[in-house]
Image 1 (cartoon, rainbow, N blue to C red):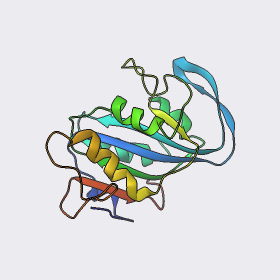
Image 2: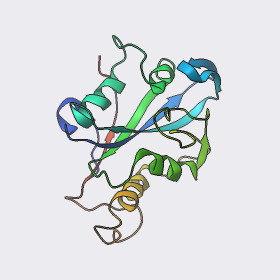
Image 3: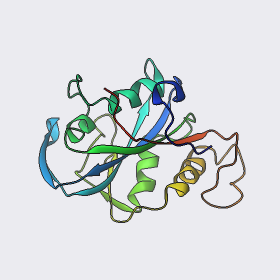
Amino acid sequence: MIAQSLDPSTSIPVDPGLYALELQLKQSCDLVIGALGQAPFPAGSYFYIGSARGPGGLRARILRHLRVEGKRLHWHVDHLLTQASIKGFFWTLQTGADECELAEWFAKYGDRRPPRFGASDCSCPGHLVYMRQIPAWASFPGILWHLSLQAEKEDPPYPGTVTSGERFDHIGVTKSVT
């Protein structure tokens, strides 16, 4: 299902899953990112890929990312979100794939930078991808399909399609949650 302008406080499930945030950085900047130290961030579009397996699942994690004020800088992405805005996000309830696999797919279309961003609990190159060119939003549910449901279902009728009743959502974010 593809949806836009839904209320994230009620439309995001409390189940565990994977998510991807589309971020927009309007101006280049240097940021200190926890133990990673100082890193340059060119202006442009980024995708941050994460998992939500704790209390409150996807809803708690995504709402925390959307909140602009009143949160301490805990995860690497929190530091970037002091300068970048969230343009949209996806999630999947499927846990057959992990965020490293999803980041690997996104990295085919961009560059992981800075190295190890968001990957302090794994050994992959990082979970933040700077995009050289943004593929159409409609294609991203197909990405999640291929990564997490490949063994359970046949491929969708054609790349980038998800029919009604499938397990994916895309939310267009129009304003931050405070």
